Length: 209
Image (cartoon, rainbow, N blue to C red):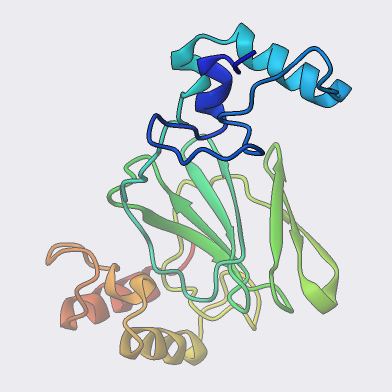
């Protein structure tokens, strides 16, 4: 007997296929032709499908970029809770972003972990950061009413402002870091100019609440 067209189509057969006595596309089965259980199962499954199902192709998905944010370090992992993204950012520790508008993510804060932040997960308002040689870092990420933009350098502790914060901001500004270039957004995000320096200076004078 001839193989059903559905089975032939699944095997890649077509009307112009070269005839060969051993090719499954044009093989006629007799009552004495031995069939393995696998062959019988496969043939039965294919015969149960309609031609459109047998020839169905997987649906292609072409991603469309909605937005991006160039973090200070090397992003290794991310966890999103609601509209907030928590990024394990390598040598720059944990970076926290508002992603309610994917086209315009906004930096909310950061914590410079002792080693290399490689992974992060959230449980409530507690972040658990896999921090390389420093093991597990557990952080309280409860949202604050005010963001201390002037606290660029975390080496002296959270919300302690000194000359190192100015040096940190200067390095970030020269590197084109969004943290520094987005302090003042009147000229647009990602634009580094004198207004960002003035913004940082005002934040430093006002201190951390």
